[in-house]
Length: 128
Image (cartoon, rainbow, N blue to C red; front, side):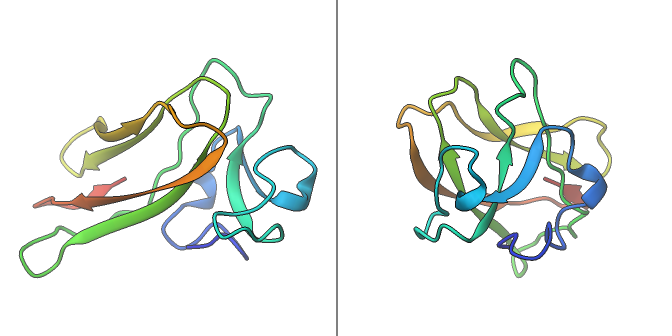
């Protein structure tokens, strides 16, 4: 998923909650001024600078269970700004109502792109 033409098949358009914006480095909204590859015309999702002191969520569609043959790895690039906050990744199994936090970053190294890969193991359908 690169957000070049839409929000990708994994993300529901309806799940783009208030605060998230699809933009690129040429938008005039401040850093980052390019994507993780240095391309200023490439699109990415960003939280609006007007959104402070509360959370904004992205949710995937439902993924099928994993097993020894079928694993799920999600690699994502993210920008950490000077704003305080925490980026978290959660897992919601089909039988549960709540998300369980499986990764987070509070951003010690600021104003740069970072990359992370998460491996997910679930015996039932799930959302991230």
